[in-house]
Image 1 (tube, one colour):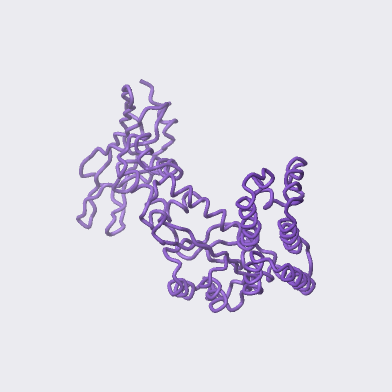
Image 2: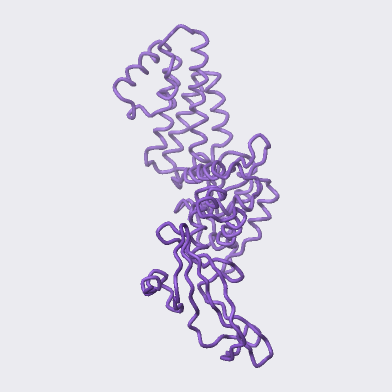
Amino acid sequence: MDTTVYELLLNLPELKVERVELENKTIRIYCHHLNTSGMCPVCQKRSIKVNQYTTHIVRDLNISGREVYLHLRLKQYECTCGRYFIDIPDFIEPNKSHTKRQSKWIFELSIKQPLSEVGALTNTHSKTVERIFYEHSQVNGYERYEGVTQLGIDEFSFRKGKKDYICVLTNLENGETIDILQTRQKEALIAHFQSITLKNGVLFKEQVKIASCDFWGPFLDIIKNEFPNATVIGDRFHWTTYINNVLDATRKALRKEFPKQEAFKSIKWLLFKQPDQNTENETNVLQNALTLSPILEELYYMKNTFIAIFECQFNYDFAIQQVNLWLEQAKNLKNEKLDEFIKFLERQFEPITNFFKHPVSNACTEGNNNLLRTVKRFTFNMTNFEHFKARCFAYKA
């Protein structure tokens, strides 16, 4: 049999194929290594004295759907220092029964699939697949913190119903996840940020100029107290949710008061959407409900007016004036549900209005949380945090 074609397919110049056995589901390639000397792992001297030969069987990438096994004949050398050693080719994983490219292929298959499925697809034990995956997906130290000046902080429920929250850090400039921390506890986060020193010797917390988070007290305190050069920005998504809840609560009250009124049904998302995003039919449906309820119409107008202030590119001083004018008008309505949002706005006035200094959103962090949910789903709610973190970074890569 002409073995040249197999040598071309393998693309391993240091191998010489002697013969090939074709079986139903496998291809067995008998070959030998062309090296003429080996380097002693102890004294680092090269030796050409062969003591004996040995055969290693290693798994390689499939060819035409058949599993490929290399029956590799290797030389055992005798060194002048008295050691005996086998010079393992570079393309084989040390102390493993597969090639590096086979290992890489298994890792790539494992990124977006359960490890058990990858094991079934590749006819590899699931524990071997697991070991290969975590060997390839080791998370580096603080390299991802380098150059980050805009930081997003958010939480993620690691185990639903257990009040077990992890913390996700995001580079708001490029949307990349910087790190996933095992806890959101204030003391642990402070210790973490204080421990990060960058390559240039600067503390990470001194490098950050902008930090965005939701309105959870510990997050805000950490940014204000631990990031001396950072402007804290309350995430726009969260305060938008607050004001949308005012409309939703009013809608629910109307549904309860007028259960037979069709106009108040199926308008929840129409109330949340911006008016210019509604179709003509949606506009008519919504207008019918607003006509029947002047209170709902007032609140809808107030919500859209408030959001419009943040849509305009006002300078900071003028934007603050507009927000204060809106507050006066909102207080005059004396609406119990709107008053709750007013209290929230006054309490978080600075982080909310800092948006006018730096129009930054924490939306990419929320988007990264969706990725975490995807990983949780296809790993069947994995509970090992370090493994979960490794899966997330591999998926994102």
